[in-house]
Figure 1 (cartoon, rainbow, N blue to C red):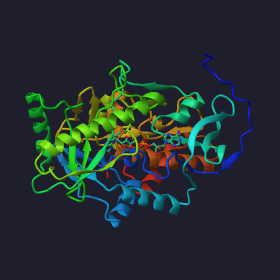
Figure 2: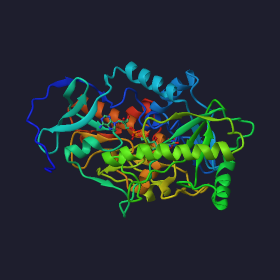
Figure 3: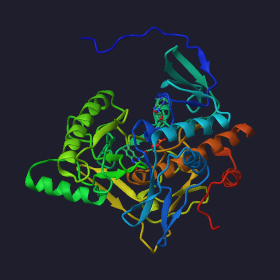
Figure 4: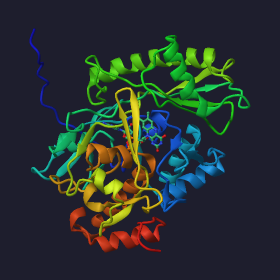
Length: 421
Ligand SMILES: Cc1cc2nc3c(=O)[nH]c(=O)nc-3n(C[C@H](O)[C@H](O)[C@H](O)COP(=O)(O)OP(=O)(O)OC[C@H]3O[C@@H](n4cnc5c(N)ncnc54)[C@H](O)[C@@H]3O)c2cc1C
C-alpha cells in the first residue's frame, strides 16, 4: 500500500482577522476542556506565610467567576500552600465576558492546522480548518498558547519533548461525581483506603497520589486519579493522534473501575454517581518550545529572580511519573517560595514574530511541571498578550520591546512581578 496521497495545491482564502483561535466552542483550555476545575499556583508559601502572588488578569477572571458564584473558598495543599476549586460553567462564562469586553475577536471551532511563512523567521498566517473549510488567519505577531506548541512546530521553531529519557508527564482523564455525603466523605482518607485495597489484592490503581476533593457544592467531588499510558507503557503523547484517541478509551475504562472502588469502598460515596467525564484527556506536557531562556528546576527551587520578570510562579515541581506523583518544594520557611518568570522564556529563539505562553513555553521538563499550572499560565498569557500589543504599537518585534515598558504596563494592569513592594 502506498503510504501517502497527494493533495492538489490550493489557494486558501483569508478567513478572519481573529485575535483568538480556539478548536472548541469555549475558552479555558485544560481548565474547562479537561475538567481540571481547580486553580493551582495562585498562592505561594512566602517564608511560612501563604500569600496570593498571581494577580492582574487572574484577578479579573476570578472576580467574574466569584460574581457568578463559581468559586470555592481556597483549600489547603499539604499545609504548604492553597488551591481554589471552581465550577466550569463559571470559567466559560467569565472568560467569554472578559475577552469580549476587551474587544478581542474570537473564532471558535477553528482547528489550527498549519502555517504560511514569510521567510524563515516570520509567520505570515495561521491556517485553520473550520466548518466553512480551510482558511488563513493573518497577523503581524502570533502567540502560541496551544499548550502543544503547534504553531511554533509548524513554523519550524525548535522544541523539546520529555525529560532526559524522553518521558512526558502522564496525562489524566478527569471526572466528577455527585451524590456524595459530605459529612462522611474524607478527602485525606482516600489514599489510605486505596493502599489497603491494593494490599488486600481487591483493587489495582493506575497511580498513587489520587486527588479526590469536593467542589463548591459539597456533594460534588472531582477525581484526578487516572494515568494514561500508550501501548508501550509510557505516558500517552497528546500530539500523537492514535495515542490520543486510544487514551480517551483507556481513560474512561479507568474511570469506570475507579468509580466502582469509590462506591464500594469509600465512606460517603455509596450513593454517588458519575456527573461528568471531561471532554478530553487532560494533557500535562508535550512540546516545550525553545526560547531565548529556558526556565529550570533550579530556578523554581532556588526562587530565581530575573531582570525581565513578567510575574511569578509559586507552585512546586509536581511530576506525574509512572504510578505516582512526586512533589518537590522550595525550602519552607527559609525561601520566599516563588520564582520570577522572565520574558525571555516567552520569546521563540527561532521565529521573530512569535511568543509562546503557557505549558508549551520555554522550560525544562522539570520546571514545566511547576509553571504549567494555572497561576503561571495566567501570568505568561497576560505578559505575552501585552508584549504583543506594545510591540505592534511600535511596529517592532517582541524581542525589540523595552522590557521596562512592558513591566510598567503589566503593573499598571494589576500584575505582580515579584519585585519588592
Ligand atoms: C489532568 C490535569 C489536571 C490538572 N490539574 C490542575 C490543577 O488542579 N490546577 C491547576 O492550576 N492546573 C492543573 N493542571 C494544569 C493546567 O490545567 C494546564 O497546564 C494549563 O491549563 C495549561 O494552560 P495552557 O493555556 O498553556 O494550555 P491548555 O490549557 O492546553 O490550552 C490550550 C488551548 O489551545 C487550544 N488548542 C490547542 N491546539 C489547538 C489547535 N491546533 N487549534 C486551535 N486551538 C487549539 C485548546 O483547545 C485549548 O483551549 C492540570 C492539568 C491536567 C492535564
